[in-house]
Image (cartoon, rainbow, N blue to C red; front, side, top):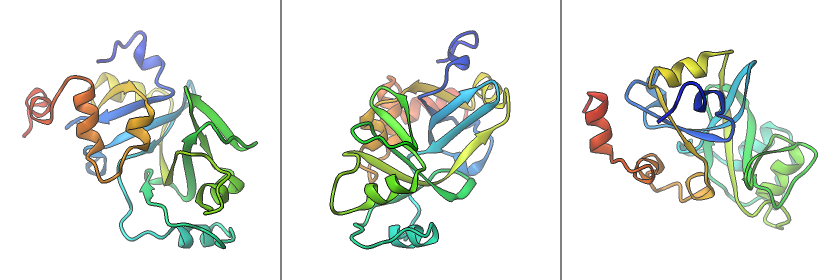
Length: 192
């Protein structure tokens, strides 16, 4: 769990697991990777919800990026803010001027060159990647208050949780990682 005096103030690079108290229904069973957290607020990307029937080519065309040689990748719903932007969470084996190292070997990019490289069948981009449309944004102190109100459980980020198979229930897997189960978690929250 989170100690308000320490953990809440250091959420950059953490994964937030939603609880049954999450502030919005669309956040139910969500995992959010926090990419930036400081006194001005926070930005994160949902990493465990796919956008059904979303084509990489359609997104790249919207971003006015050439789709030649593009291979099909799953597109995740990153959040309701900035829905016109593609956020790429990726391994740090490829970094460009638009890349920012977040934690350990995990970076984020919004640079169009990285978007193209990340989807190119020719290789040369990051070995591990997750493409997300949109993000979640918190105003100053909002996220800290939500964590203190038990809307979120912060856990350490790791590559297996972020880049693991999207067909797996990542949220339940993350709960098991911290020594809990979906049933126990539901009982603790008072909801079935």
